[in-house]
Length: 443
Length: 107
Image (tube, rainbow over all chains, first blue to last red; front, side, top):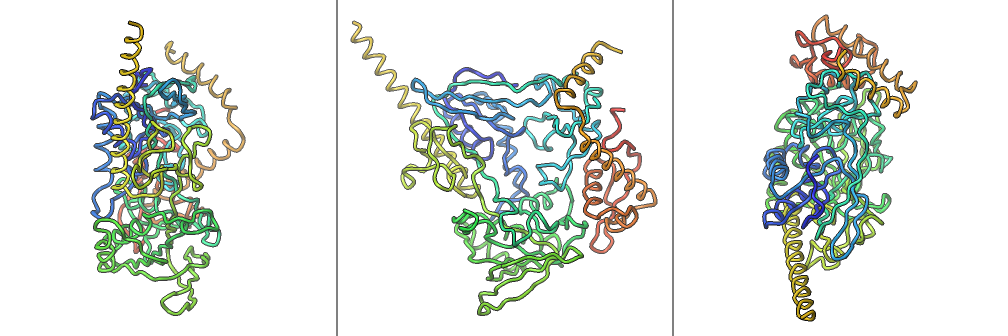
């Protein structure tokens, strides 16, 4: 484990792209920063994505240099696999109570050789590949993980000792325990990101029930060169699909599932994935069933036009129901808006539900800053101070405040770091003035 | 037996007890995984196959076959050898190990 100090200028909660950027921007101004991540690796969702829109640049090629920089920065200490149990304000600073979960590996000794993983005999569905790929019961989270350290999953361990038998550094520690830590920080930046609405949220779409109704994040992994499949394929039988449907707003703008807002990125990620499917498999038809196409960012409208030019079909329609055929094909019952509401049944090989974005962390009672009704952090002065929470000294960035894309998350992370820096400067000046006043009164 | 091995073996025993040992459902999961992998390897000894062909040969659901084939591919025991229509074909990698899931290095 990294040597942790008792006091930092800033603590950043969340090691995704926004958290890493905020940590780097704060450390770059000379402040000491603690970056806390609950997963075994930093990188968040972005490191698992294939490409970014609208440039189609490689996502991990943008993300991994920031991961390395954050991990090796002289003024950033990194705590992974660590939960934040409480943030409270005490004597002009914040106290963070942390729980470091056991990896069952001595981090200081492990050289990340991966022999333990190779030796383990047991395959387990890999969270990083949304269940389609496999990991072992002891595993390094993925090829770009930082730190490159394994974590042992006791739930699937068969206790055969294969990992310990081959470890060249003798660093498997079966007796490792959760460790409680307490650190103080002058300011806190929360960048805890997103998760998707549950696949099962819209029962009529069969998500979680039909093998070939999939999540867009699984599509990202299938399209990635380091993904589990090497092709876009149907989870039911491994066939490369010839007809793919995207159901838009399948978890957003829908009061029935408690997500009334637009998730802002679904139109663009669906178009991006559709373009890439067409490029890799030109014979495959891709159809987006949409309510509205919201292409609001820089270069996004052109990207939408590009998708159309590359043969992606967009159909203004409301999908009412999806049913599964015996061969795994899916029949979409749709109301075609541009055809006067005609109802049609259309068959596809594979369906992607464009799930909405919801907050990954709802720390009610854990962090003093208030949340909005939708679970994202409240930003009281959203037009003028979009990175400030309801508590002076706690700042927020990225999807922690609401759905947004990667460029906006990075901009907001920079804003949060700048607000934190100004806050720390203000606090130190106040403290210096109080000290001077105290000296004068003592004299 | 070295002192080091005695130490981790004792720790492992304690760990196993603390985690409640191996439940019946976990035993069943492990046995099923072993059986599926054995059946897939056995079928692939006859040459590369698609997932539906493997499913027919092993009488296993295609979805389970795909997942286990992808697991073997991820750990270098199976390779994709080409396409048969819209289906990738998978074959055993020459010199791959025979342990249930891993490389067999721990045996």
